[in-house]
Amino acid sequence: MSKKFDYDVLYIGAGHGTFDGATPLAKTGVPVGVIESGLVGGTCPNRGCNAKITLDEPVKMVREAERLGKVLQGNISIDWNKNVEHKQEIIDPLPQGLTKRLEDAGAEIIKGHAKFKDNHTVLVGDKEITAEKIVISTGLRPHRLDVAGTQLAHDSEEFMNLSTLPKNLTIIGSGYIGMEFATMANAAGAKVTVMLHSDKVLRKFYQPYVKLVVDDLKKRGVNFIENANVKSFEEVDDGYQVNYGDNQKLTTDWILDATGRVPNLDNLGLDKVGVKYDQTGVFVNEYLQTNVENIYASGDVISNDLPKVTPAAYFESKYLMQLFSGQTNKPIEMPVIPSVVFTSPRIAQAGISVEEAEEKGYTITDSDLANYWYYIVDKEPIAQSKQIHDKDGRLVGVTEISDQAEDAVNSLLPAIEFKMDQEQISRLVGLFPTIGYAAWHRA
Image (cartoon, rainbow, N blue to C red; front, side):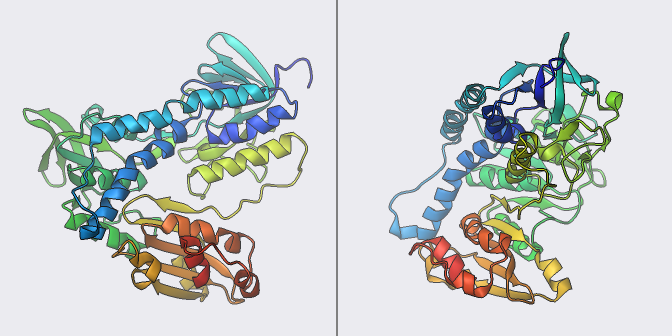
């Protein structure tokens, strides 16, 4: 490192797009700095993945108990307050643990908001910090509807911190967050209304499977309003009012704005240094390099077509570690990135979509898993899978709806990523009886 720089590599943001790579990079002896204005770990550990899966665990158990019926004695219900307390027990230690992990590796953490002064210098308050290379890894933040009264709505973090669940909950949006939280709130006893921007729910997932999830939630009392065209929110005597459509009104106790997430680039000074970006994120090349040679980006803040999920940020962060430490000089080659929505049942997918497979004339194999013995064990009424094979018979895609969909798809990832042929797949025999064995048996 040239003595004129404080660090070889300086990361802005301390989420998965940073710490998964910054930690091993610092261990190689490279001087590493990490700037973070909030909790170390970013969204996923503190107000995203870890929190939501903890809140969802009782939902999964209630659903299974419901299906097993008389096999189990007594009624199981969710104590929402205790559920939130348990969530805090899980996530509270994470920032400190991740901080220790970074610092033990040799990285230095600087608290505060970073703003570019030039392409090698950022300001944190009045302090100037310099680096040979800078990585933008600031992630996404909740989008807020641009309507009158938007301040009366809440975001996903506020929902997950609710000590008391509202009796009537209105969710604006039907993506990951909207559908997962509708599932949780409904299972915990709230009356839930979901307002759609259009007539499609979870548009990035296989729509016939999505319909099965929606129909099940409707049977459980969740109300869906399509093409809602939300106009405004206002406070009224008995709670809050959502004004939508053609002079229509809905009274509710609490409003969740789940209309998506946007790149967290405010007041970062990108225009000053000429980094190119738009409302979808920062533009990078095949080396995760911006148009400014020494400035890179990783994680959800990048503008690309990949799912905005932790595995993608993890892989990008690890790639930059290898690039900066001299372990590679090749462009990044992204692996198959799976995605899942934690509704009940879940929908998980990886590789080529059903729609793309139909266009290419690939073989699509349907499996009615509700009649497969392993899914009958816990009496899953909704369980289906589509596996996609190319013209050489290789497994290239899968999508599944079931309460075990994420584990089934995880089991099949090696076959998709490494383009295994049928002979290779036949040599992979999972533990029995497990969902992995069941998935491989169908591959």
